[in-house]
Length: 115
Length: 112
Image (cartoon, rainbow over all chains, first blue to last red):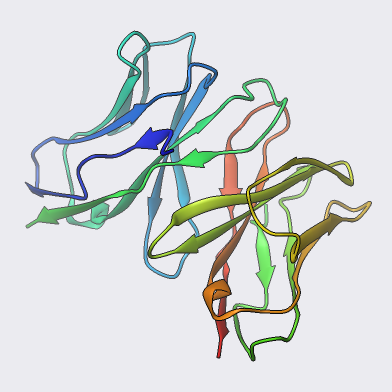
């Protein structure tokens, strides 16, 4: 049972435009959500996170939106740059506050930013 | 501040052998988690250690085990290796009080 889903395996956008990556989850116990960027044969790099008590969190060009009622979150990258090209993973945890650090990952979306 | 360090980076083993992978977390991080990444299954949680105790375990056979030492460094062991164990093994340490996990570069294990 895939508790965290990224239904778009790939996304292509033009440099300077907005990239929107989507993620859905099924487990109501998840209370913390994270986005990671990953290059092949390397570890994921933490980008941004959001707790379930918020609906938006911004960090520079990255904004994460959380819709709890729809069990949906999205990552917006504005403006997109060629260096953003990578696989993006959504992850969820039921341990906000540190009770656990177990993360459930989505299957990833390959973002290609065209110059 | 040094990041998460995993050793070795690459490993080739033969079926039936065992292997030990090592992870040094970010200084001050007491929680260490391990993940397996394969093309078919994606990133899957193996286990989590906090203050030398296993706090969570994923759905992997008993051949996969781990431990954490008093300095928070962690090791994972896979016994009786199978071809399907070939994967990128990732270690992550977490900021105290949050679920923000920071990953190492991983160990690429190839079983032949």
